[in-house]
Image: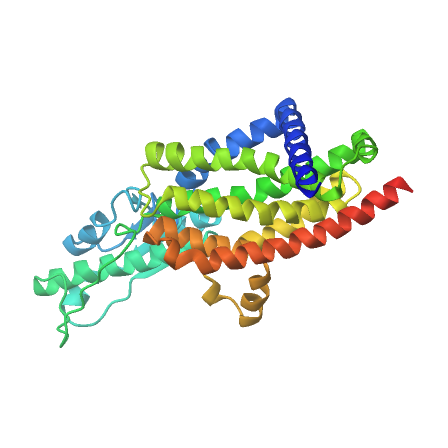
Length: 381
């Protein structure tokens, strides 16, 4: 009897999941959203946003017109900077106020002669700090370039410092410090969180708004069967998108090397889908309409994405935030995804994060099940 009941329950979950997939295919807007999120969205996010300096507009006020000043200007070349534009000193404030240039370099008169005479002339660098990341990186680039050129002009060597030790830098996992490698993978992880919560939560709200939840209630179905059907069906759609993004968009189109096992990552993503879908169902039981669900999703997704370690390292956050985010499955998923895809970690290194992620997801599933049962009772009444 128990075996027959279990088989019947599995059959119900399977058939309800097929219904969910048909509803998803019929919803063209959501279907286009999924396709875009795991194809063009990842490509745009990876290539359009850059964490390094690229084609920064720079202007130069050269009042010295000496070989050294021209040497400094010629050292600012693509791809880090656009070709420097010469201008007069009285034009500088106007172009900076209009945001035409990120950097303006002012080289004073008699710069080379004062430098040779040991009088330490000052070079002024004006920065438009509207774009904080670019201004910070660009300032350090210009300072390093100017120091190297001046040192070579005076001593004939690029570096005049003589340290008692030789510092050898080795960059692992991303030797060229290519921000596209990081941005593309993190965009996949962010889209998994966003789409899973949206799809599962919207599926539940759609049942309530269309009145089909009443049809399900008159059938011999348990709330846990309805929940599991929504989880596996919508999770399957997201998982297929993840596989396409990892194999086609990241590796074939963007040429991003994957250090670890894609299969292991997909398996971890399947566990995470269970946790994220449980959050989506819980939000769906709290909301009474699509607008309410949208507001709840905004309040949920933004902290999950910003505080899970995918944007800012967790070590840079306050300790209280670090401890609080241990209650979110996204924290463990981001950590194990980075370990697998960047550092080539295997199951032996990430099994604990997978177990913690599954445990946190189970807590959210139980909470969502209780809320779903109470909402079903209210609907029946």
